[in-house]
Image 1 (cartoon, rainbow, N blue to C red):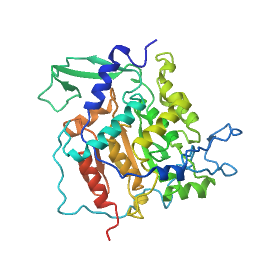
Image 2 (image 1 turned 90 degrees about the vertical axis):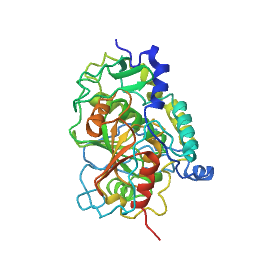
Image 3 (image 1 turned 180 degrees about the vertical axis):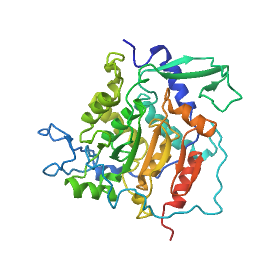
Length: 389
């Protein structure tokens, strides 16, 4: 039996996970009154058991306020889904692409955001900082091909050159097409699904539904299903669509987890699978971050949902990725997250692509722009995807 986390490395790993990203950017602050208006009631009716659908419309309606537990979306495109007919947007000529500065807080004003994100990370016990079966391969990695373009990721930390990976995900099934998740950032039900996605090192397209009601995606869900609840998972590879965060978590493990189910200890997943704990601590984490994504940004372009998905490299727990992810949700911009938790094979891919590992990193197919640095990414999104008075 291979443990999910080697306990002797957990302390070192938590410290490394904080240091292995770049900068942060503060998100809009919302009041506690917003939370009271939104509520934290999910949509988990005690009488409803099955949540799996096969491209069919469930009967009835289940609407509730606030943190909503389910949402439906078929995998077929629709007029309000991101498509090749995306609106045209441009980058202002005076916009300056920032120079990447890893492990540097470039703006003192961003410190409160980093501290709040780090506190939220601690509340969730650093869940999703690591892939399933995370392990340190070596503390003294030596690159035999330093002059070649075939470089690998490692973390340089003082005298150490740390290389890590997963002991159980090699050979695990990978989806040919990205899964699709309808959700919003502050929803604790959505958060536990996102954490499992990171744990399994999956690439997923996110279609934001701020507050579960404030986007075209939300309206599209209601037209198709009679429901406005999140999260809702669509797997275009299997044709399965699914409500209920518990069912989604189990489905992801069964479908895209290790082929050898005895290679890890399921009990080590308790921060996610112990529902009461995960919902309670995820709610606290959302409060620490001022309920991100609970409202659509007032000046967001009305056609943002029609944009092509923006590619974001990062991971759920990163204090530096968090502001960018929150901005994408509040602007109702579809985005694909390439998971890069500790031990992820995608870290090598990012090094091969850019020559460095630093997150967040975005690729915007709507403008052709690629850039690092959290504050500048958030500013860029505000410049391009808001309505100017």
